[in-house]
Length: 147
Image 1: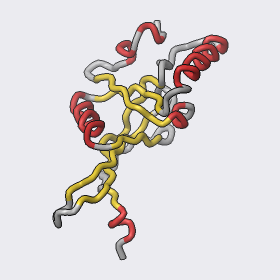
Image 2 (image 1 turned 120 degrees about the horizontal axis):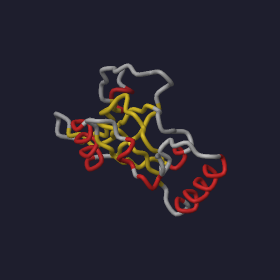
Image 3 (image 1 turned 90 degrees about the horizontal axis):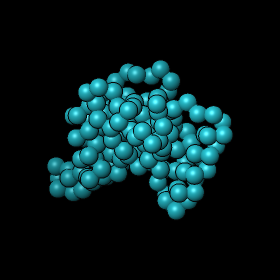
Image 4 (image 1 turned 180 degrees about the horizontal axis):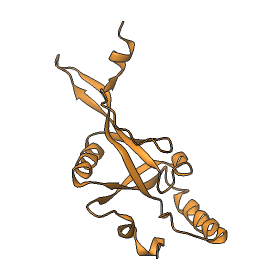
């Protein structure tokens, strides 16, 4: 049965990998197992003219959230849910970050690992039922403010 003691592996779909990503504590209350997210990474890119510029790229789209902290989406009574929340709140009191578990194909897992070493990954929520993939251009302030 699903429980934090059974671990994340019970939630990973066949052919996928489970990855853990740090998120801001404020997001933890808003993201639930079963939600879909996009993962963006902000990093310093070396431009053609030799200067560095901070850019953001969407590297993963429509990713399944399989865990939020120790919440695997398991059925719990209201008391169990409250007790688990209190326990996590106490342990997170000294941390600025929470964690989510993501189901990624092996290729996506490599890109997430690279993003975590090269820049700052950010999770963006998708609306319920939004599963469309979109080609995305990297964002930069230079592009934003160009006339």
